[in-house]
Length: 88
Image 1: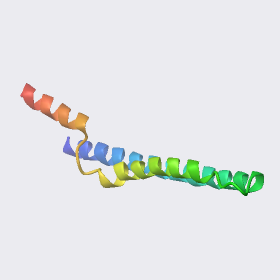
Image 2: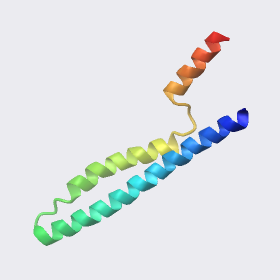
Image 3: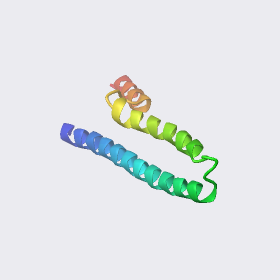
C-alpha cells in the first residue's frame, strides 16, 4: 500500500514538472513570435517587453511552486490527513 502511495506522489510531481516544461516551451515560442511581430510592425516602440514581463512573472511563480515548494504538503493534503486521524 505504501508503494502505491509513493508512486502516486511521484506521478503527481512528474506531471507538475511536465506542466511547467510545457508552459516554458509555449512562453518561449509565443514571445519569439511577438518579438518578430513587434520588430516588423513597429520597431521604434518595443512593446513586447510588457507581455514578456507579465507572463514571465507568472512563469516564475509556476517554477517556484513546482521546484521549490514541493517538499511541503499542500493545505488540502494536510486537512485530509487531519480528518483521517480524527476518524481513528
